[in-house]
Image (cartoon, rainbow, N blue to C red; front, side, top):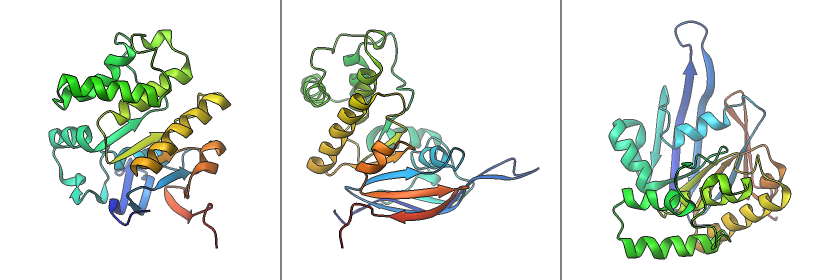
Length: 234
């Protein structure tokens, strides 16, 4: 594990209905992640997992606290600055895939690199590498409707990795997958984590993900109830 800080969240809260009956979706969370961590964020439904992931990813803003990523406090960025920051630093894997249905698998992945103004030859090389990694080299020209759920999720992972992000946020990435597809997906992400020291933070209730994680953070009622390293040896 490298001792380079990727995420540093201080006293982060997200409050709904603050003027009437406040509901703390996230309540005073402190979270520190180093480069190369492979972490599962777990807890019962409604515990604040997805909300915290969205806050860290800049998809939502906290009501209190700061979120520092690569020494930049993203809570101080404007909306346009946040969009640009996410484009270059964060990879997202959503439970619902969020692939654009009218685009091919190749185009869905390439879109991120287009936005980054990466040269065509470099894009093509990266796409070839990614589709070999996700074991779908023959599905480049298929649209999402022509792919299975597991294949769509692997394309979503490739899209998240296309920009070579500092870290990847994955919200219930295996929720809709069968055992084999989930195992394949976790193998891909674990390989990237080991070989490229890419940092992963999962929001999950899936025991298959939890068993592979090297750190497990449990949220209860928007607060961190425990933070353990189950794979560590004494």
